Length: 217
Image 1 (spheres, one colour):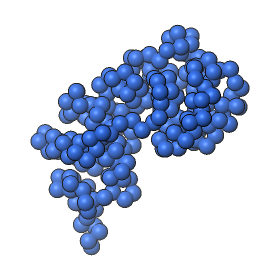
Image 2: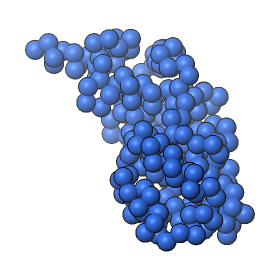
Image 3: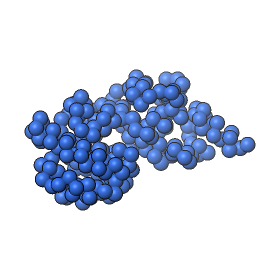
Image 4: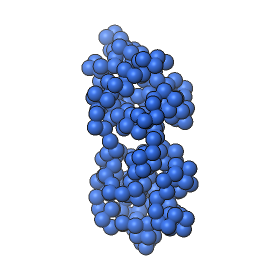
C-alpha cells in the first residue's frame, strides 16, 4: 500500500498529465446525463455518445420516453449492449421521476439510487457532474488504477475501493480525481497494454515493475 506522501505524488502526477479531465458523456442537463450514464454500463462512452446524438433530439423529457412503445426505444439504442434491460430501466426511471420528483432528477445520491438502472457508481457520477457534489465513482478504470498503483488492495471490493479513496484523498479533490483516474486508466494505464515503459509513476508502482521485469525475461 502506498504511503500518504506517495499518494500525493500519484495525485499530483496524474493531475499534470490530465489537468482538464472531465466526464466524456455528452449531455446538456442532469436528465440527459442520467440517461447517458445508465446507457454506459458495460459500454464505452464513445459508443454512447454516438447513440445519444439522435436519442437526445428525439427524447427531451421523461414523458417522451414513455410516449413511445418499448420496442421503439429498444430499436433506438439497439447498438448498445444490454439494450433491452436498459430500455426497460430508462422507462421505469422516467416514470419514477414523474411520479415522485415532478419530472426532475433528484440531487441526493440516496434518492438517485432508488431509480431503476441506477447503482452506486451512476448515482455518484450524476451527483458529482450534474450537481457538484463531492463523490468518487468507481468504474473499471478507477478500480484497476487504484489497485495497480497500490492505493487499494487487490482483494478490495468496489465499495471498499471507494471507501479507501474517500479516506485517502482530500474531499475537495474527490470529483476531479475521479475523472483524472478514469483518464489515466483509459488512455495510459490500460487494461491490456499499460504504458509502463513511459509511466512517470513506475518507480512507486509495484505492478508496473513486475510487468517490466516479466517483459525483460
